[in-house]
Length: 244
Ligand SMILES: [Fe+2]
Ligand SMILES: [Fe+2]
Image (cartoon, rainbow, N blue to C red; front, side, top):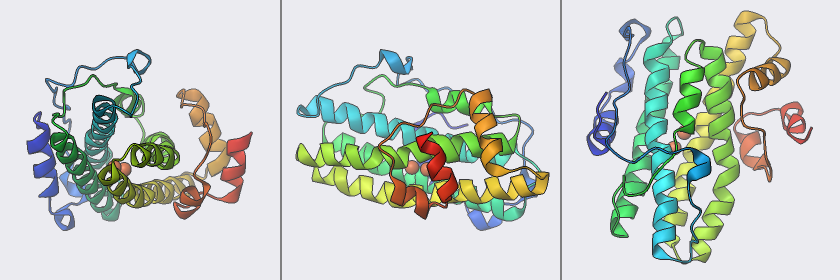
């Protein structure tokens, strides 16, 4: 509910995850409206060359925006869905804390380049999927952690290579930290997705394919980071389904 990104990431970092439990759910927590960045459709965002300082800053800004959205998403999962084991809530609070750390790393790097979070336009695709999947926890974990965050695993190596080649070694280090943590977030998504499928007597692979179609999940586009996906707990059957 905190609109200011700096205050929000600080407050998130301060949550004591071990004290969070299923009995602390709220009826409704509206997401704060932030004054900036300006939100535009993803197709309207201009691709800039990373050879320029401004282009690199725009890319770091886009990543910082994703991380701030990821804080919102992780906290949203915690308060929105009742009836899960205490571990579920504690683990997603820890995810929110890691996302806040990612945001802070990128924001500080951006500041070092002379820019501020909010200086570039950004898109709202992550939150749109959160809205679409707010009715059911299984759908949420299937399409946010197991789809959108998983795409981040694929996207990370080429983005890192591009920034490092352009001379931004610090961005490369930050992307390594983020990738390591994101594998854990996707692993949690996989864990709870399977847990929910088992509880409801659903077959995970076919159920995922149905949900992806029903909710218009982005089509998987390679190259895939198969080692990271394996580490995050995707099965060989699921990895094969990417190619079909
Ligand atoms: Fe993150
Ligand atoms: Fe994440």
